[in-house]
Length: 238
Image 1: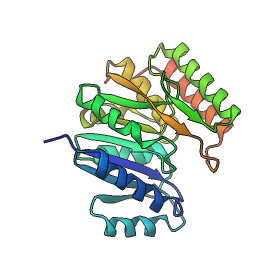
Image 2: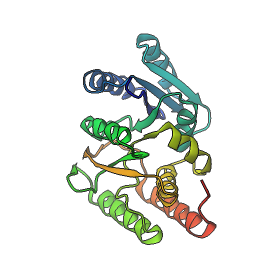
Image 3: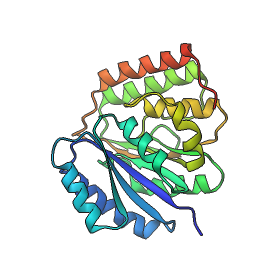
Image 4: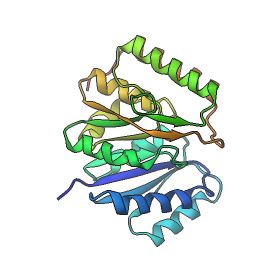
């Protein structure tokens, strides 16, 4: 029997985009993924109609679940959803679906072939990026170069919201990841690679969301603080 997989969608006040996202994702998974799959909406502190919209989707579709956290933080939501998962593989993608879903199948295949983690990359050879603002492009490339220079890592894109890993890797790594926000992804990948877990870069087609809520400068500053914590505070043993 093919390995089962959970697809987590972390959300914060996404009452408008969530139904469209779930509909598109369900249609794709039904046609492209032979593995047993389950979508989990991980709501981290929404104060709009997102909880009710999520419950309605869960009632309408048996392969959609809902997880509510009162505290905000994308990393916090992912960590809880992944640690509680009973699937063989866990994954996540952003609700705006900026990453083309065609890259999901190669990620699943990579895990089935023995990789511990598979990560979408906008910087790997073969990736295509559309409509990205120059500030975000420069910040992203500079940040990923900083990671490589500080930790000598090989993965190319720490921040793409499109990742998957085996449940065994999740159970081993997640207890050691301290960040609960946007730096969560970077910390997870740095610890994973430096502790010998196999990571597969998967080139993606990515279209910038003009309505993104990510505050580039503020997020970048917190990311740098996170890198300094890992560099000088020491990496955990896994």
